[in-house]
Length: 247
Image (cartoon, rainbow, N blue to C red; front, side, top):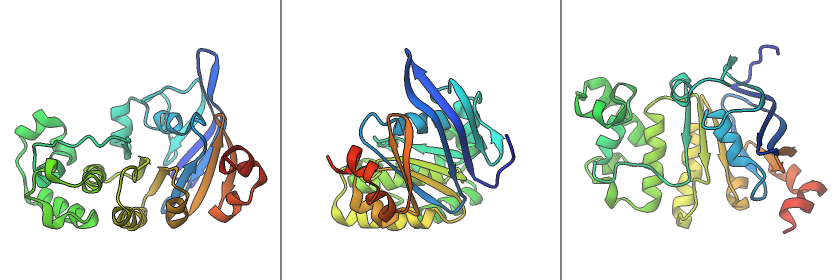
């Protein structure tokens, strides 16, 4: 296996559950500054792929390199510390804390609620919170309790909690589910902003949204990559139309 300039290099990756190959000899490369969207029918293996990258699931075989460092075999915690952030479909924020507190406890020194209790908010943390709040569009909501935020704002807050850790790779699973039209537009802008200087991978079903944000689209089917390219290329690929877009 050679060194690569890619932020993420997944090579010959497979994982089997009870003899069923959920990911089947998959190879995927993502650049820094790239916003990659992964699409495909349910059961294609999209979420499983993110689970493998973040260490939640162990690969049966193959390699996952992040900034040229082999990640298979590392704990989830070690992968986060290396610079990989992952957002799941349901937001996990501290509803009873303010937006400011949610962001502050996500700063690497304040990890976990116990750490947060003993954690003094120093100037560097305040500055980082201010920067991230501006990036996610919540600079005017810092004192609000997280429970009072709209659904979209909660999703942005959770993205902000990941950004506090300054990840180099950010993975988001269906970030616009349940959002209003306006929130979707703002999320598209947000995702484009945060892909500068890092790699962002998004799993999404909404094709209009994919078209708005994707630098490149990867289509998965039955644990493999079916097609890859611009939205226009994959939309016109007969195999993609057959297994996915045609339904």
